[in-house]
Image (tube, rainbow, N blue to C red; front, side, top):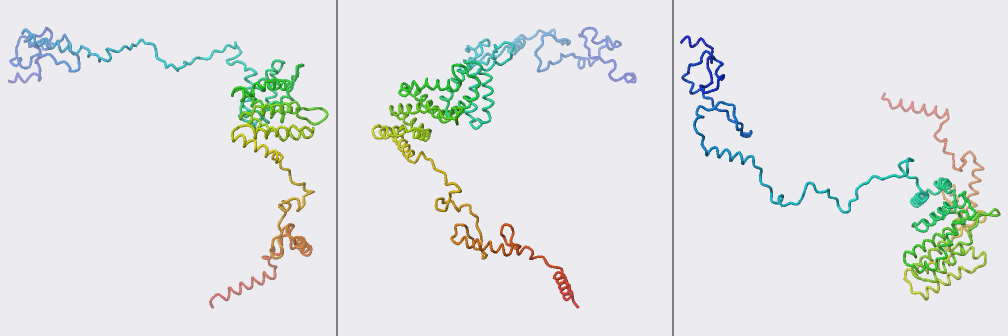
Length: 451
């Protein structure tokens, strides 16, 4: 028994089997040939179980079972093969996918309204990426800026004029400039006034003056070309009539703003425009459609007072003739009620001298009888008993003289503005009174102390 305790625990034990390949039990060479009674229990070399997550393997390196000589069960093998096949076989596809006609190689789909982006191609050579702007682009930019910001006209006009002078270097470019400004002034809404001011400034500051005419002469020629088509435009379609009415408004603004300078006197207006306006109004009243009548009313509100003064000076009864035609339209023509109301208001406006109000009389000529605001800014004075009075008071002279006498008799009591200053030093005391007051305070304090 002692011999059995001399070896180390577990020594000379082997887990190999008799049926294992050579080398499996060679770790303990001294025990070869001996068979332990418990070998049937501990020395069974069972194959290791495969992990559940790993696929089934066909070969194994483990030792075969000692019962491997037994024939395998065909049913089990069939079950194993069927399970393996089921695990490796892919799932059947959805019927919708099987019947689909879509393809991964189909071209990319774009909506019908989609415009693919393309890089801009510049063909201006090696000068740069951006093409040089043309005179039309430059003028359009200037006019759009003045149309959106008309208050910047005085600040931008010098720069605009200098830029245009650098561009207008030939007769062709001068004609193009006149055409561009005329077209924009007669097509852009509410741009007639600013366009007329621009034309007046450029007529005096465009340096190029070819033999065919300067800027002002070319502009008047362009206006005359449009004027000669008035009989066809006044009875045209709506688009033609609107363009013609815009031209009439621009011509009215041009008459008021375009100055013709001469070396002998002050600038004057273009007489040719005055006669053109008279004939345009005759054309409008000869075709008394509502749109034509409205255009004539707006033109007379704009230029009526200036035209009448000019025609009166030259002894021409043109304005009276025009208003006689207006009265005939009111009596004979069937037009909308609103249009008739506009014509009646225009007649009333002219009867009130076009709404002009004369200024008040000059200061040297103003009197309480002819100027109701004569005493508006006069100062207010106060008597000795505090009663206020102004220059409109009937007793103003006597009361004001009394104030002057008081200031003369007692100048030290009044400041420069006439206020009484007698109470200015009433809080001050001389040295004698101050000394007596100090003694009084000390005596009063001594008497209040308890005896």
